[in-house]
Amino acid sequence: QLQLVESGGGLVQPGGSLRLSCAASGFTLDDYAIGWFRQAPGKEREAVSCISSSGGSTNYADPVKSRFTISRDNAKNTVYLQMNSLKPEDTAVYYCAAVRNFQRVCLIRGWVYDYWGQGTQVTVSS
Image: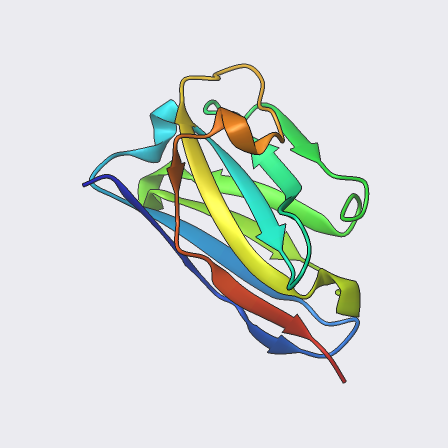
């Protein structure tokens, strides 16, 4: 089956950094736009960022803008989310998701995406 696997989560102090990875299994990511989402306990799922299938367009939610960077490495069949200046409110389970096409633009709306990973836990605490 087509699968996405997130990795790179963990415990980090406020102000620290983590790089999350979203690796594809059973398909190649270069035909898919990728979104990152997160969900904290007791809260609704929240959009974080997305990147178009071409890699030429990205979007970021306001709470992470200027702190997070999304990128893709088609040779590794992987999309990354570099997270800097982490805050306690960034604590959540982070999910990646894929949708075919969307070459020129991407949308940070969960309903757009067809395939979802299992998530990786990010905890920001001193």
